[in-house]
Amino acid sequence: MFRLSLFGMSHQSAPLQVREQVALSSAEISRVLVHLRERPHFDSLAILSTCNRTEIYSVSNGDETIPEEFLSLLEISRPQIRGIPQEYWYLKRNRDVVQHLFRVSAGLDSMMVGEPQILGQVKDAYRLCCDHSTPHPLLHKMFHLAFRCGKKVRTETRLGQGAVSVASAGADLALKIFGSLEDKTALLVGAGETGELAARHLIERGGRELLITNRTLSRAEALAEVLSGKVIAFEEWKEALVRADVVLFCAEALQYLLTARDLDSALHHRANRTLFLIDLGVPRNCDPSCGNYDTVFLYNLENLGQLAEANLAKRKEDIPKAEKIVD
Image (cartoon, rainbow, N blue to C red):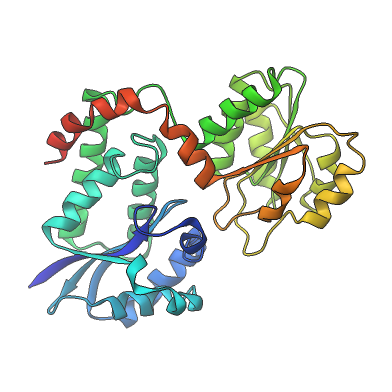
């Protein structure tokens, strides 16, 4: 008998400093999926890892999968997960798994209700699953119905209207801090999907100049062409802190990219100009102590999540209608 299981954590169950310990890149997810053939208990498995959640969706044959088996899988890429307290994890079975994935795809389980990115991230998780194996028909159908559910909710309710996300909240806050962005320079550190979205929001609000840096130069160049930005070598981006007004951090890094020492050096040459740091990285890209300076504003995912929550009244009015679609 085949059984559906879900094991993971999200912003609903764990704080940012815990979630960032298990946020997996695509390469790390692939590493886990490659080892799946050595785990005959699992027939199919998909891993969804975003800024706010890391979840394993599985179809197993025989007995129900236990947390230890999921932890041993995650341990392939992140050995440190053994030190995470049990209460931060959750385990769901069968119908509860389906309902949860439908709610995730619909944006009902997001930190920002109705966020537009999550449906694409669910699709990416399924695509990675397909890249490494042929998914079990049960997993295949569940994910495709989740795609349909997410689209239906966005079409028939207001959950997808008036784009509110962490990235847009950061751009709105930048506008409030500076009053106008027409003469401001933004520096984007990390040229992935989240970084592109955040940069677009700043440009839409009038940002004058966009500097882009990324470990993979070709990705930075491609994004610079799309957004009419200028590329900076990754080894030289800290020098650009002197001229930047807003810095968007969206890079994958296991250690802080910006430390207080780095900031001390840059602030010495800024003549007390305000600097706004938006840290959307998981794990965080900025040392929290960078926010201790009088002329520096530092916001991370947690802060911006709380800020954007205030703009979700209309979306929340349609939650009951969206839940009916999920059911």
